Length: 455
Image 1 (cartoon, rainbow, N blue to C red):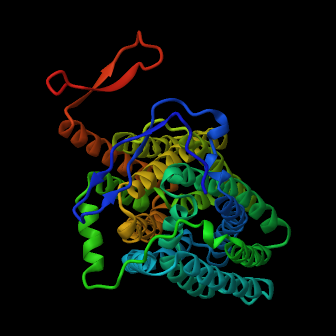
Image 2 (image 1 turned 90 degrees about the horizontal axis):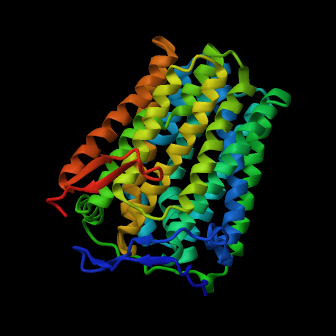
């Protein structure tokens, strides 16, 4: 049985949705949580086991991605080729994402994850053999990236929904933030290790490490106590399941607005490693080690953002949009950074705001949908978030290679920033809100408040 929630948390009343079932209530923390409750979801034994396996896997995943992108850049000499690799890995999610969500709603999530991790391990092992024997070519990486993308179609929706089965609805928000913290801590360590391995022994051993990590993830999944899982009833097969998920998502502002912003972020701002490869190679000339360092700095900021998200007192739609706008603004500032030092500082800030947006939007979408349809709703969200990178990766890579890396980074941040500003104005008009500036108030000099008429 999961431990009780902290006493400082209060929840809103459940809302009845169009499907005649209750949506999980959105938790609103009215007081700042004690530090001992920052990672309270780790008190659940099953989630603690899962988090350990996830942490090891994330380090290896980041190592593989950094090694893969740099190897493609060395083999082809083209930043566009790196973008194509990203596109092939994420394109299946764009085309087949809703189908993966339907599978997550219909079948046991734990079994899906075990099968997917086994397949990912085989692909990583194959890439390791090709790299270590010196036989690897760019088209090999393309094929493996595409097949791995097909595995991701099933893995990601099941992984997102499985968090609820590990901790239950009371700890879902905290568990999502803990997962993000784990991912970013792994993202801080993984690129740094990848940079060292690329310089010392080559990319092949990074792929081999990921293959072993996939095996450890499978072992962790097998260790979970089935009797302590909050297993949801599988959705029965029926016609129109995908259409039902889409209609449900479009009927709720707390789902479709984060979905829209995720689309802008995914297409323009989530392919940052492609642009960092261009800056490391063509602008700062810092090589593989510098490329790993830049990715690690982004992960450092993201780690801080993930920890901050665990202590977020209120989860509001406007704060999610604000975080997206700040992420875009940071990327714009990075485009004008005069040196590697200032560029690195802004990358830390970029990582922070990116994670504040990603955790907030993920939490809002998950908690705003009931369990019977959550797999399909999350698959649509993932389809936009991951599939958008399939479009943005080659586009930004082409701009960086044929125009200028600075222009590419400016486009990467400028479009999401303008989109967030537009959505913010729309939401303010609908909610009768206004921006109030009071320099005498040191704690809250800038606040969003209700207009007098609306109040």
